Image (cartoon, rainbow, N blue to C red; front, side):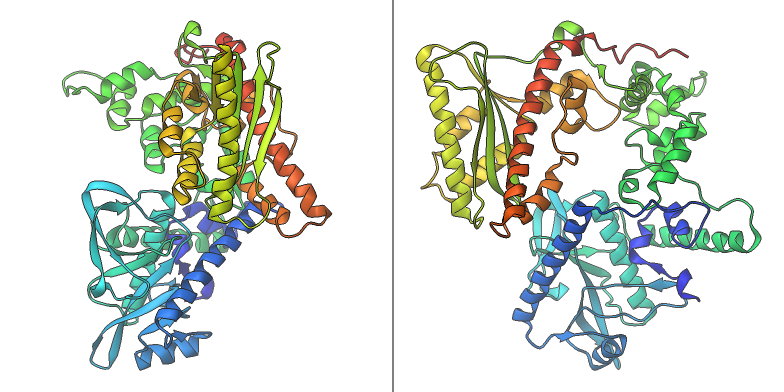
Length: 565
């Protein structure tokens, strides 16, 4: 089998259309572009993997570090206990080329040693689940038979975990084809925090397993076979585009998007799953306009009712019964047709509370540590002792736990002092953020890390649970319908606000932070200023958003209005 026909583990969870196009097709890739955030993600993943490999070497100093296929074969034949960075032989019969970050010896069958694969991923693997449990290990005890059960946790159903699980199955099947697999049918994923999770690959309790993997592999093998026929004989390309979350980082996204938009394709309604797109098309709903014309109330009723076999039903009834999120998809399609946001509620209910003194708060973090608290102050009239403007509390030096707690303490001293001044003068006070889970979590972390440096958590918590702390994301979610995400970068432009920076974004700011803290030269100073301006703009954006909700947004069309045919 030629190398071009071998499938990698990453391709098993990848869009079949891209798998075919990567080997040559009728669409051209996007023009090359410098994506600083993507490059940072790669660097961060490499940093995490290097750190974990170093920790494993500390626990297993005799571990074999492979640098070639020949060395890997030698280590496997010799029964090395732990093999780091192995180069696995290709499975030419199964059409696979596989990757593992670590191989751990689990036993022996005759003259053949058996191994379990481990992957290192810069992701979170588990979620809380009261009735579930998962096997966990330690970097110091890598064998699966040394694992223990952790109650109240299960694997996440996120796309990143599903792809990692399928890649793990791919590596296991490759080891199996080589006669090197362990017999318990498990594999491990080491997450971004160095936690080792042992996953049972035949389990039916996850969004992937060996059976699902085998089906996905067969589908992609069929795609490549039909692509080869297309290359030799021409005709229709074996796959066609559909839009999904993976498209944002795909090299063929521009040409796929142009094609789908020309069709008004229903897959562009975010975020439909591929299985849902199939159901919609089978019911005659192939465009977002057709989806927008469905009755969301009828769909919701159908989902909670029993459909009679003796009564004729409209397609929306069958779809509503099958797709619990159909009403939401209909509303998103209506926002797409309108070309902007819609009202979820009556105009009178479109409101956000205001106060004599209003403070918009935003923080910036790097690798889960907060280095900047920023806020803007706005008064409704001239108030003695209160100055409108932007205030920042920042650490540009080493980002230690002490530094994180100190800048929060400085911010809180100013913030609580402003509240006390308002209370002493009989003025009302309100503070706003966008998505309070981020700010609340950063505050709790700062207090927990160094409680002797910060205000008591009870004091902070009492404020966060008060009506004076307002999450603009929750407010917008209650009253605004968009065609997809409900982020600040999406909503604020409708309110008339635009960031000074051409590439505003939390992940982009992490790239700026790396430059800002590398030195004290002019480039670093410019990056610091860029971060401060970005943070200030985020604060202004929440102010624009709440002012818009209280005024012009009341005039938006209702999402319950049927679009014109």
